[in-house]
Image (cartoon, rainbow, N blue to C red; front, side):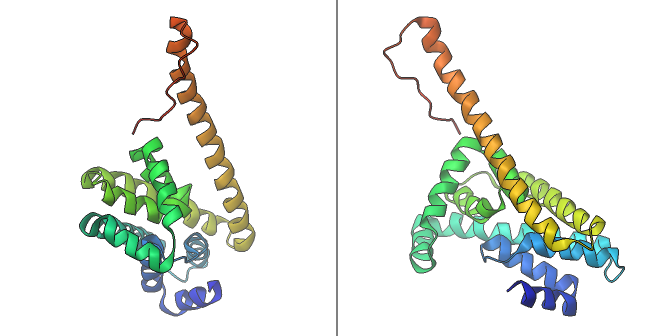
Length: 212
């Protein structure tokens, strides 16, 4: 699939980049980060305009996110259930809901560029919960812009080592995400246990349920 998409990008340039990122952000499993690395590399070689590539990539990613958000908001859980029954992904919706409860708006931001695998599902859960659209857009555009600048910039700088960079960034992203989640949950556990320690009530189990 990667070769096919790269071929389309080579033939149609920023138009192909825009459409690929629309579908990827809407949930189609395209290698979107690899496409951004490739776009940065091609821009470094002078074959496409960097500003046009940046605009097309951000616009495509944000549009794809809106598709997931509004489809869930208008169609509701029944539509989401029909889709997941047909193509799978019910477990990912559950995981995204857990993630959204823990991180709220920041979860939208981080799943644009750090935990990208959850991004399309966070869009769905944001729509299901009727998360305010202006706030969704703020977090969404901020995160997608950072993602495009990060991966496109690395592709531009390391234009001769795209595949190695893609593998390295994939491993680093999950390591950072795991470390951030561990720190966050540890902090919430500490906050939940502290009142029990001060009151001397050691029999009551602390409430460790994260707030939204």
